[in-house]
Image (cartoon, rainbow, N blue to C red; front, side, top):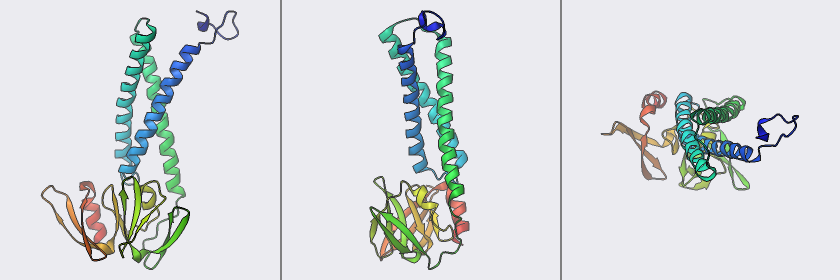
Length: 238
């Protein structure tokens, strides 16, 4: 077989089919890994749950990579035939796991680098304002005029204390959270960041979660606190 020779040897043939198969493997795994990372980073607060995020990402990437590779490997042999080699299967699998891990590492490096470059958060933003991007416009909104941010149908929205809703340009609540003062805003769950001024009361529900009563523009809103954030919330709200 010509492709088993080195390029400078006589009779060398570039392994076009093998190259295309490996390229397809790699692109499929990279795209799956990127999709998983994007989904997980919108649901988990990376700054507060980095270890949990990495654990979930590694597990999902491992299972997903194994599944995708097994399916593609099986289809390849069904279509092109040839003997099934356990050594060959394992070798390619380890390479793809390495590609998946490298992709996760690159994404984490980029995000962590963004955190370090973000301006330090103030612990006292009373009376300060935020520039909120919405479409082609930017709104200067006072901290006291902000009720909460929520993730509504894939779009982060700002709900002001007067009930006005503003669709923002931010890609996730994680991005918004980095801009806000931790002294006045708290991420209560995956969908909401609230200003402390709208929290009327809270109590423990039968499921063990904290049930929050929020008041915005004379409207009462019930929201559940993530279990793992209860202790941190009690300390913050004092």
